[in-house]
Image (cartoon, rainbow, N blue to C red; front, side):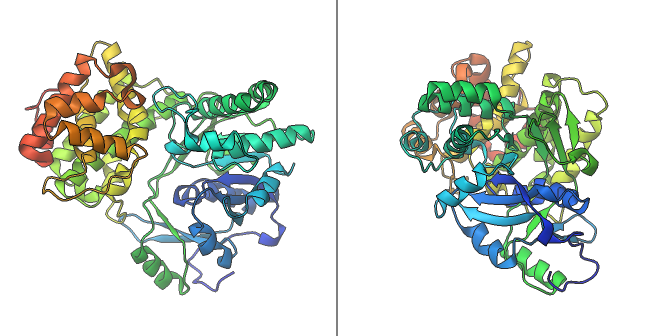
Length: 485
């Protein structure tokens, strides 16, 4: 344990006694600032059989940083007040799937592993975001169907489930912690379909025996920067190669279905419920929908961070309108103050201590829009309402993915569909009446709404305004009621 100031919290348990019970796929900043913190609490409470083995599915960065530190890292919780630092010890081992694939498969096959959790982002499930079905033509899926050393999360999990079944070992629980609609149902659907493509009997077994409870996770976790590392090193008196930074707020809602057992998550503040769906809708449509809209408008306005963007009265007003427009599509939540949650959003976005880049949030929009904005529009239209504020968020995404900002500079668009988006933008040109229908034709993103005039008209109008007067003035006009969508 490093010699750090007494004010820094540290693991309140002997790490030598930890035994792994969880393998986490996609051990990025969010997991280490959220689920791993809860498990750190449970280990401190004496539940030593729930240590985490983390696995990176692509790059070795986390392994390279954490392994020399014995898996220890710092969580810095930032707000307008003093930063609180805590050393987290729940990650006992980190693996890199492409470098040691057999070792990862062996860990997953161990009967002691009773939960496999995931934060692999929306694109990591190799599925169609509009339908939730497995994308059977995805390159990783095609590879994994013909290899016993799979590279996708889906392929890895099914390969190990097949091994456990053959060995008479009960399946683990698969716990998705990503922003997917009905994430438990979605991950089970893609796993069962992939298993069936391998072997029909295996597909039936996965469908009948695998538990995939749904979850909702909520915490703002910006990417760690060199400046963060320097600040944390000063506070601790030692260097930490891979700390994480987060806001004070966190929420984790979990469907309570763990046939192979689980730690006492509720004792650490996790909400164990019978139905996660109402919480999921609230978070996806209020926080995530606002976050994406704010990111695209903010980036186009030249704002580097979320806090900079939300300080713009037009953008803040647009976010408030979006939250209002999404509210009628939510489901009733018993015992939870949705109005207080809504009221907290602007304050959370405005946190001056978090430098959450708009560019970071803007990544992978084609995977995020279906659940964050398009689903809200679909439900509003079904209730006889206008598309409303989500149409502006969609238009801002369209302007962003053209790859050219308002000053004519290139935008580094990071998206699985970046090539197709660039081709569409190049062919349509900067003309809203051509570009909006062309991008709306992407059925993977917009589904059956692609040609619906109730969406095409407001998105085209919003995009035309973005081209004519820019994002800042468009947001001002929308929040002032001068632009009807």
